Length: 308
Image (cartoon, rainbow, N blue to C red; front, side):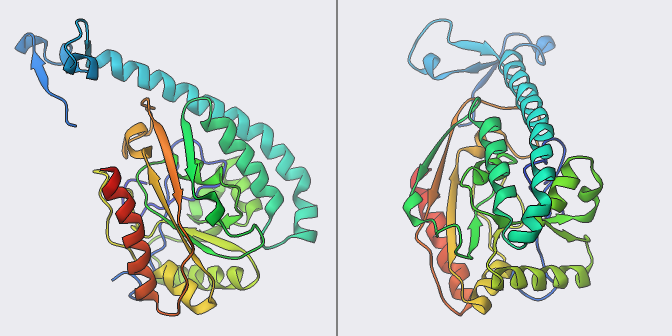
């Protein structure tokens, strides 16, 4: 998650310290700050003061020590990961019991496993973060294969997207599959393994994604290739759109708002207060990857610009 070579996969079981591994095939698919004041220079690290909105309104006692704000966010972060870990362990048992039936009846979509993932994400996120959805009517039916693409700002993004309840596949670096519970659950879900910096493995991932889509499954990509650290939308790689164009399935653009402020990139151990908004846009279709890429990016960028 910390650079463009660390795309995680986010199965519902990646809770702590996992990072996303982004799909980047060898072909050219991708062509307020706060005011600080110092009470004493020698006490800088202990007495940095942050003005809250109440301070701007002229309310006394509206300045809080930064360390206290950080402490609160860290405590929330600890509770967040505690909940997600214990929930994952309990729900993994359900997934394990159901797996033989999933292979027999629904080998490619594995909707039962993704239902478990939705339950896990919901139980993990809703006690800490308010999530608002807009455009749910634009989601394809669960049985309709599609390529979902979203902007990427935070480790929280995958939790939020899992709540949608669509059985889209992810790509993960192979080392994650060795992790107890996390890796095992990813394997059961049909997550696609990828060897980093291996062009052959990257092309194999592309083929597997296309094969899954043809057999009725969906895939999810973060086309920026890494998380944005400043909230600005990065350039999109064309891999996801190439799959959509070749398989003639719809591209579903999704805009995530607020996740980067709650759990900033590089600060996965904290959970700041705030809310998240998920905007699902109308599906787009076409046979030109570049046109699809530009259209999807413009749709997502337009919402982000209006929010900013």
